[in-house]
Amino acid sequence: MNSPTSSPTESIDRFFMQLAIAEARKAEEKGEVPVGAILVRDRRIVGVGHNRPIGMLDPTAHAEILALRQAASRLGNYRLPGTTLYVTVEPCAMCAGSLVHARVSRLVFGTTDLRAGAVETHFQIVTERALNHRVEVTGGVLADECRALLQHFFQERRQKPRSSQDSPAAFVAP
Ligand code: ZN
Image (cartoon, rainbow, N blue to C red; front, side, top):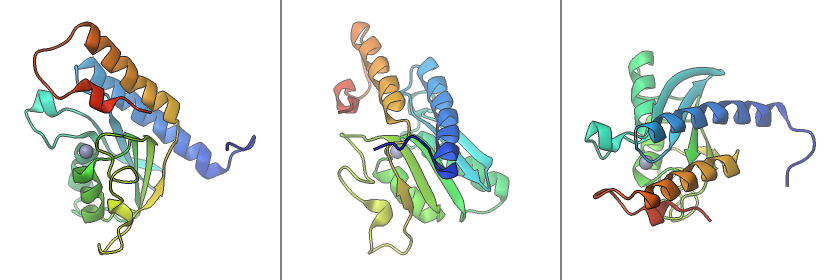
């Protein structure tokens, strides 16, 4: 339930999620599944990324991975403690695992991913006790907007289907 007044953290979360949504739109413009990510430390952006596996011919070029790579390169550290990752969609197993490897402190995501979600939906990788690092999670921030982006993308694609790529139906949110 949303309370009428929001805490400073909620306002900050919504602010950075809006930026992640703007990143997701860049993916959509390129014909990629619209997912965007922003990595923040001390309220400063240290990495951004949008989904680009088709354009980069790289199955690992998810928004989260690109944001982590950019931040690690900029900060000169393969570990990113004290950072918060904002991403429009619940991360997959690869990205969730990468958040653990990178020692990201906090994850804020928009909508859940019924196909591949690995933070709450199918696996709980970032909070798994067997792993040596756990990530604080806040889900559902601007979820409706994040979900609408995906739904719009796949609606458009169903109207003018492409020959290849993964199954659109898989990404349809609840
Ligand atoms: Zn991913």
